Image (cartoon, rainbow, N blue to C red; front, side, top):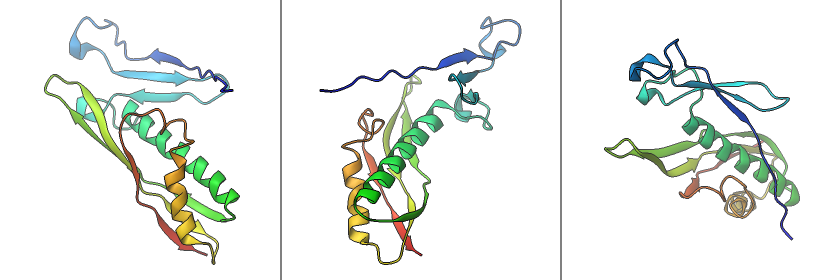
Length: 156
């Protein structure tokens, strides 16, 4: 039997410059993500839309969540396969498009993990694991665009 899980957060708009949304360019597209017991995340919209490039935007958060979920499942499945992972870094890329009316969406994502494994690891098996993750990863199972991977490996 499946179990349901509830995830909560508080999103608080921080961009009122004193006039609210009276003028289109009169307010900031900034907000905070507040999750009980966790650090506040200060956010803005995409810099292409005038957002603050120093702050995370929804697209950054989605691609980061997808990559992190993949990584966590990779570590778990590698452990079960007897592959000792000593390092894992990813620089994921999400490809998006914006329609003339301003509507946007992700077309695809490519995860590019650089994985360090102990010498002698079965690299073919290490690579196969990526194909199994979509069966488990909460985020990957929830998005409606293809998620690809281009992993590289280093042995230590």
